[in-house]
Structure formats: C-alpha cells, structure tokens
Amino acid sequence: MHTFSGVWPALVTPFTEDDRVNTTALRGMVDYLIQKNVDGFYVCGTTGEGIFMPVEQRKLVTKTVLEQVAGRVPVMAHVGCMAAGDAIALAQHAQQQGAAGISSVLPPLYRDTDSLVAYFTAIGTAVPDLPLLSYIFGGPIDAVALVRELMKIPSIAGAKYTGPNMYEFRHIVELREDNWTVFSGMDEQCVFAVMFGSSGNIGSTLNFMPGVYREIRACCRRGELEKARELQIRANQVTRVMISFGFPGALKEVMTTLGFDCGRPRLPNLPLCPENREKLHGELESVGFSELVAM
Image (cartoon, rainbow, N blue to C red; front, side, top):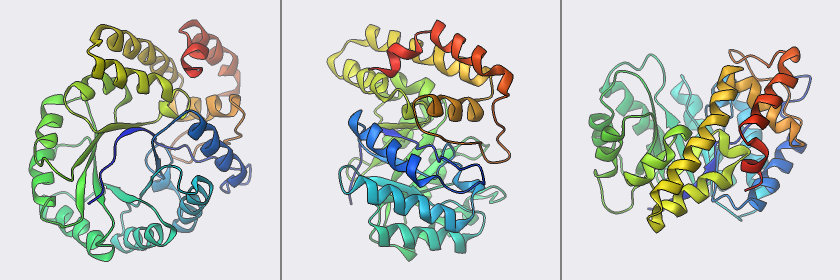
C-alpha cells in the first residue's frame, strides 16, 4: 500500500461568476503550487468545498487537477458524500483518472461506528486497489476506536486528522507501523503534529504559504524546535486575521489577490464583504503576510 508525506494544500476550488468551476484558474493554481514545491494535492475537501458541489463538478475538478499535475506529485481526491452511491461513483472516477488515493470525511448523520464502517467498506470495496484515508473532523465519536475498526478494510491506509487533540492524534499514528499515513489537518497545530509523528500536513493556508509549513517540518527534523515554534506563531497570526473576517471568503480573496480568480465561496460559506477587502489586506500585511507567502 502506498504511503504519503509532506506538505499538501487542501486545494481551493475557484468558481466563475456563473458558479461553474474555473478550470483556467485551477490549472494556474496547480502550477503555482508545484513551483512552490508542494508534495501533493488534496482536492474537493472542506477547503475545496467538495461537499457543497454537485458530483459532476467534483469529477471535473479531479480530472482537471490530475491532467495539470501530469504525474509531478500525487493527488488525493476527497469523495465524501451523504449518499454512499455518490461517494462510490467519485472514488471510481478518481481511480480512472489516476488519483494516488482517496479520502472521505465522516458523513453527517452517520451517528455510530457500525454505519461509518459500512460506509467506508462500501467505498473501499468499490476501489480495492486505491489507498483510502478516513478524514476525522471533530464530533463526539471516539476517533481511535473508529480508525481501529476501519483498519479491517484492506485498503485503509491511514487518516487525515483535523483537530487539536495531539494525544488522540498520536494514538492513531501508533495504530500501525507500516503502510500507514496520518496527515494533520489543522494548520494551527502543524508543529505539534510533526512532533507527534505526522506523515505530513494538509491544510487551507498551504494554498498561499506552503513554504512556512515545509520549513516548520524541516526545523523539527533538525531539532530547531524554537524556530519551528516561532514560524508556527507567525503563520497562526495570518490565520487568526483571516478567521476574523470569515475564513472561506478571506481565502478566496487572498487567492484572487495572488492572481487566481476564485470567485465566491459556495453556500453555506459566505463571501468577504467588499467593504472589508482593504482592511483585510492591511491587517494581513501587519502580521507579515507577504514575507510568509514568499517562503
């Protein structure tokens, strides 16, 4: 089973004014981020608004990204859906297009372990040769117990864990030694996740400042923990500003400023208020945004 590592943007999905996928901007973002030395792409996840898009648009995003990447880095398609049949269709399409792996969030209303295991089993059975990562994102469920049950599915290859609980995170890391990938998905916790054994990190702010997280990981490997901590604090200052303006809208605005027309977020996400654009950019520059983007 293939394993994955490094710095992966949870790729933003750009939209046109008439709410179609902006494939031109999407291709440009892929090339830009490869030039920034990212190690892979996670497409149509929470940041990519996949769960708010029709299946055909999600297929278009996956196809476009894989075509543009052209084998330069691995691509993982998020296929999570409320309807298991849609998730299976997306998984099969991802395999046909050449994705290196697939992932799924825990669907809402799947309230117990048995139903979640049945859901992931259906996906894994449909594409048995494609590595499958569970996407753990909040909620009251015992994540370690769930992943332990999911490990009975032959294609389960790890997890994307988006949360601050490093104790729980480490337990998931320790569930298997070989053929096991555990990505951290909370940008604000990257340095701690590295210290607790993350294979890599997948995140929203890696769309515009992936170099910061690459350096955080490198500093930790060299034992330069104080420098890694300082970089994390600086990155978190940018994240905090964006959250204060409404993160999804602020992210689309930032990417547009970098030269990629990303349009409006999909509901339930809301766009940045036009009157706040200048204020957003002013506050970002006050915390060193441009310097971090340039890394």
